Image (cartoon, rainbow over all chains, first blue to last red; front, side, top):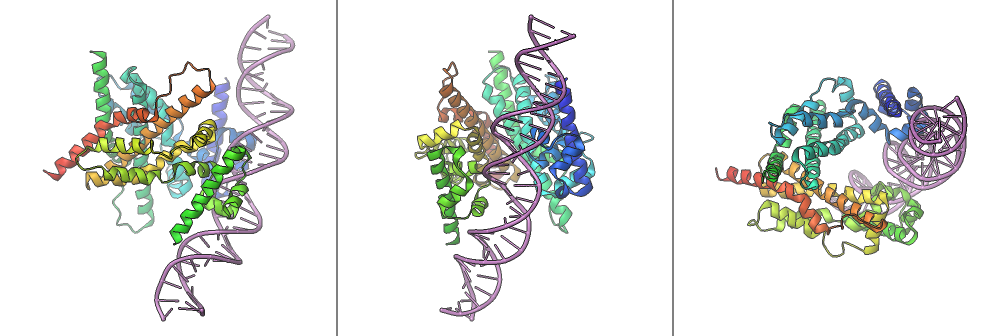
Length: 210
Length: 210
DNA sequence: CCAAAAAAGTGCGTGCACGCAAATTTGCGC
DNA sequence: GCGCAAATTTGCGTGCACGCACTTTTTTGG
């Protein structure tokens, strides 16, 4: 039960943070306000989030890590590792409910929120490591970790590119490259990693059938 | 001259930070002390570093980013991209002067410093992106960026592993895996990325000689 | 059902990061 | 040299993150 309650207050906090940020603008939200809106002490808020930005962004990105890992695990063994990973990620970043258009606008606008949003990509690393390790079997444990970290880095690059171009195109009169869709961008940035994923997979197969 | 002076005070600050941290222990060093020791206002210190940990670690890792990029650029075109990158990195993380044994001990001991040290890997991303882009020619600009980010991530994994095992083996009576040497660890974590680097290089070559 | 232990929440104090605007230094053309 | 514009430094004020010790709640074992 303790886990349930913890997740509940966590959600309450991030929900309150996002709501207040949208209502008043992120600069007019004090930590005390968030805590009060969530019905906990300010100090408790700090036990869950170490920055306002983190709390706000969490309302949008919550659980994505787990969903990505699960999505990778769910792909049938028939499809290659590279495809499994790429499609799982594209799916999760195209998922419905992703938006709250106004929330995304807020995030893309404020640099601090942009940064916090981008940093959430590192959260997929651990779950993704497990998912990849599962598929590769128990070969060298470093491999899965490096691959997962690389995938997360590629996703981060895609988000940076996406946020940068969209931010630019919304402010300037715009001879910027038309901001491609996020799914396309993700496929593009993940593409250079497929040789590495394929190679690791082949290694694992050879290891299993010597 | 402007740049010179800025680098000078930057170095003075990080040097003072490291010296004081070694003398008194990192927890007994106030920001005001560092600023005073460097002969600037506390506020100025904050213009250069956004945390004490950053300042301390910078005394050890300074300029490494540039050195890695230069080292990659310097490898003759004969050697493959993957080898160039791996060897350049191994060199820079084995460079003499790296240590200050006591400084490294301090860093490995305190978690906050460990984290700051690990985060310095992201700094090599931009220079390395340029170096790799140089070698790949002006194909898709995202590729170099993703590869550089992946390499940085792999280096980060190596450092994490290295710091973890060394920390463990120095505190416990130790049935931990004997902490491998950092160069070995780096080669191991970078290995899974060589297929990606090779593939990008081949693509670039084919693109140049259609 | 009840202690006792474990875990989560809380209050307080300390240092700090950072925005802002005034003061100081630096670079440069004349 | 001279003064002006840009960049840098500085002081100040505000909010905040986080360690610590303590209280309240939940879990556990007898």
